[in-house]
Amino acid sequence: MQADGTYLKVKDTHVLYLIPKELGTLNHFESEILKPYGEANYEENPLQFRYFWDAARQEHADVPFEDSHWVLMSKDVLPESRNKSWTEQAALVDDLRKKAFVNYEVPSLREAFAVMMLHKVATEESLYQAGNEQNGYGYTFTRVKEATQGYRLAVGGFAPSGVSVSNSFGYALEDDGVGALRKF
Picture 1 (cartoon, rainbow, N blue to C red):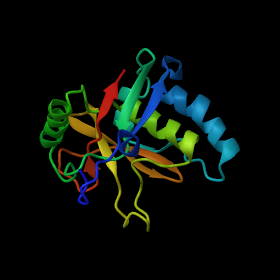
Picture 2 (cartoon, helix red, strand yellow; picture 1 turned 90 degrees about the vertical axis):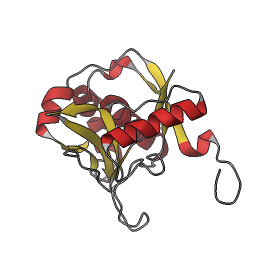
Picture 3 (cartoon, rainbow, N blue to C red; picture 1 turned 120 degrees about the vertical axis):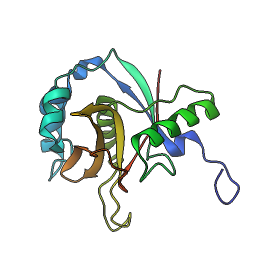
Picture 4 (tube, one colour; picture 1 turned 135 degrees about the vertical axis):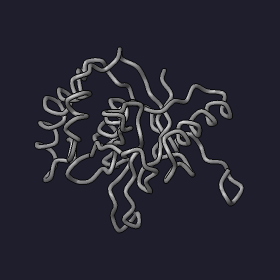
């Protein structure tokens, strides 16, 4: 419920996308599908990784997408999930799952990136944005299931030059929250 007593609808807080297995891997999706489309349709290509931590890219960028499935993902990080540890954020998603009686989970790196890119192509809207004047210069990243070298990964900071994948070094960072996702 909002402060004014009205309820938000799922369409206001979530997006629904089909994640096809045919996307291949993150590397394939970026280089063979997104970059050509982005270069043909944007002055500055947002449909790419602006930054992808080297160690994480080596470990996760060639992992194939799962079988085709639908995902319903939050458009933003969960309220009160910023500036919390990974354990606290995972507990927030678990609490949402229990409260809503649906199988919410933390998004995977592949799902989060795919949703961000598909939404950009479909609507021109950037989810999990980089800081700008409209959002008070606050960046938004969602932590994801994957970790590299013991550090939880975060994806977001969507800017005109693309999306970042970084680590949060185990800290509770102001920019890092957690999104929620349901698979169908």
